[in-house]
Length: 89
Image (cartoon, rainbow, N blue to C red):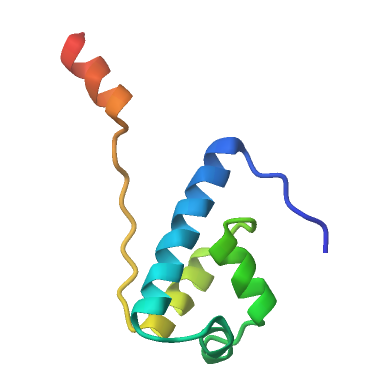
């Protein structure tokens, strides 16, 4: 498998997503192995997602949310810099 080159902003987002996935998984007491098996994924592929080193599809995110017993919610938030631009313009 060839490692993907992610844009720095995508890397930050992937790491944050992975951190949230790990927290949600730990909160319900599942190991990476058990969650990966539950959603039809290998532990190593799932671990890469938690580490934020791999890009993820919406389908995979939905499967992960289902495996965690969670609802998948995606939001677009304006960055603080962008909010400040609007207020000073």
